[in-house]
Length: 388
Image (cartoon, rainbow, N blue to C red):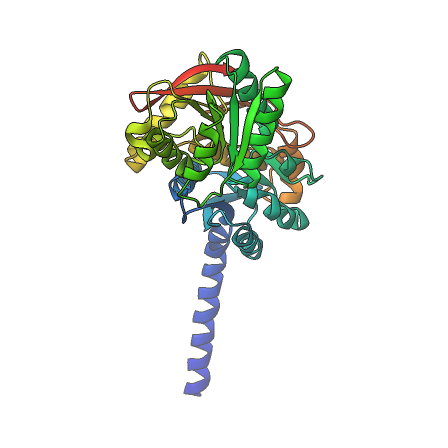
């Protein structure tokens, strides 16, 4: 008997049998597909608190979607969030955009700032990757002819326009000053506010500039104080707006302080401290829910607080809706491939999110976007009105 031949045959039979067994098992595992979705926001720098808020909204959406055990295109899907930090810096923003492209993400939620969203959008467009910004409001973002660019909030034309008219008609502003931080967002919303004030018959008595990293505003505030404004509008974020309010108080400036969604945050009260007087700040946030829709937003806030042990800062609900909306388009297209689900995403109409009903126009902008006008009382945001 040839013992070596017999041993070889037994091993061969064993290996073939094992392969046959694995052949019936491996396809079941192979059916699960990991789908990467990118998220970008500033997780470092002065508005890192807003960036983390955005990221938390994305995490909530991903966790809920994975808990459902979804299947798309006949495969069980596991979503993976690829979170990146752009530091509110355009160069860093394009670098992380390229990184997400290299990671083969199927879609991107972000960026937070207009200044990073706009340059990054070209990179996503060139690769055909859908991008939904939950917070970039500069009109240019959706006016570049990129069919991959969408946003779920109203833009600066609406935001600045509403606030400018409100300053003249409702607040009866007689002498209005404008300051901006020279970012794409800050300058954009300030320009629209300026136009709307003049269109409503108001007078802009001064226009000054600072930066999104500045800490000393005494020179520009001293210049404006001499012009006796009853309203000062600031185009920028809360990290600058809070300290500016403190320095206004130290100079004895009692003018109302206005701004867009960048200062309209729960964090402003902490940043301004006792300089935030009741009713002094009037700001507007893109978005707003009324009637029956309020419960959805309130429920989201409770779930968010339970999950992260902190309150929503500003944009988290919009990130949450944007990510769910993107996946809903994948489900409807029965594909996670951008080329397949992008046309479906573009046709979004009447999607019911926690931030309200979402429909896109032919530029990728939200149709009939709502704005909520707020003030602050006892350090808390207090809604004044919802306008469209």
